[in-house]
Image (tube, rainbow, N blue to C red):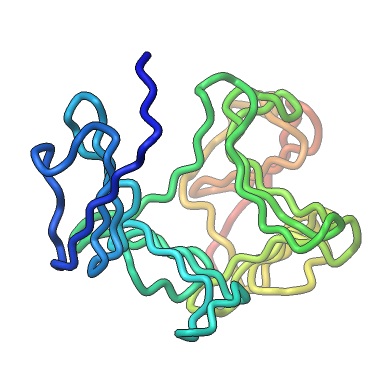
Length: 230
């Protein structure tokens, strides 16, 4: 392979101007000082965008003339990121952030929300069953104390939480049982009538029909209470 030691750089200050294969020689770079873009020509005559301020924008500091690197921000699809990483799609286009692997069963793709080695959370997709033999989405809080919990909010108000001992509270922040609902009613929408008192069932199962409420008190053992109007 022939070796070339010189690096050639072409420059344009016209906003939005992109070089064509006729403008550059193989391996030559072009920079647009107005758009903040950098281009490279491959040996097959294609132009590669190495950096485009409208596609990938990197801030070292928000104060012009004081680029200390103390407030780094990266924008993808935006030249004015408002957070450390902002991904912005075009008008009418869904914005998707993807974390992917090589397609094998392991390792799993995951996102960690990290404070320190004793306090961080993780969202992991486990397609191959590498965690306890189960497949699916796995949400983990690695903080090993009683403050560890999962909280679900809508309209910036808490609606449900799973605490560190596995109690699920709906409408309460202090669940005391495996399911604790702070409401004046629950609803089982579909009626079910066990075929007999020895029909298949699991202890604790509850169902109803127009005449009875049924409770499975032991495996395949049902009891019922009659319903009446008042």
